[in-house]
Image (cartoon, rainbow, N blue to C red; front, side, top):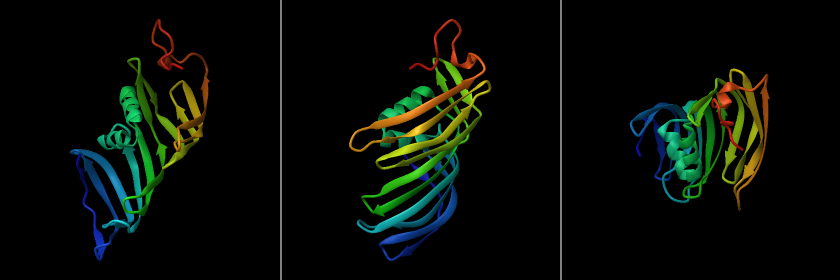
Length: 192
């Protein structure tokens, strides 16, 4: 795993670096997109850090997202891989706390989304809403995905400390049975 970016940083002794820059980044020799960093990064153990990260055009299918999902939640990474999830999103996050015990809080705003289920691709060319996340859980707010003939929406939250708890509500709107949700002669592509 290799992350390549050119950023300027000013050192304040050997304890921390002050960073404020934007760069195009590569991860494992794959272009990932433009990322902006602003804040301070601890260079030695126990010193506080606060680093804001923004990425206006990330890709769900990028190796960076796959590696992050695998590190944070291996089962999530496997699910994303099985669904062949792809599309674009904006990310803003903040890394805070002392070096060695940092917390990451942030939000993802999906723009487009597509997944494959039972060999059939389901595309959402317009996605709106926000997914907020932190060390102990997160929240889905006003998430709405529009396919050509139907739409799906989601609201809710999850907590992962001490055990995983999920409370999500989903909505579905359509003028009939959407053909992209069903395989010919078979049941639903989206199974309960």
